[in-house]
Amino acid sequence: MKYARNVFIQTRILNDKTYAVKNNDVYLLDEVAYKIWSLLDGERTVDEIAVAIAEEYKEDKETVLEDVNEFIQELKNVNFVEVV
Image (cartoon, rainbow, N blue to C red; front, side):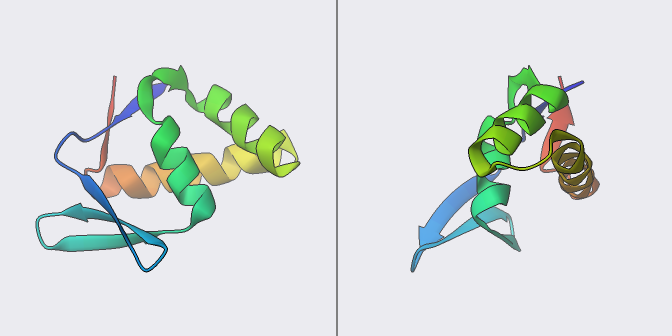
């Protein structure tokens, strides 16, 4: 499945911290969350995103896939991403 960022979500970097902002909702994105966020371009599958993260951080792909799916579900719950 492929997901894309909601076009109405803006990201801001303040004091070396990255925030995703929609209206009055603000979410802090850590380094890995921001990397996943940046890969949610509507072109990559969840599996491809997990592989990219696993390779970059030298982690087990299956564990990363679970984490990526969990993070995407959280983003879906607040309408920050949509299925493409």
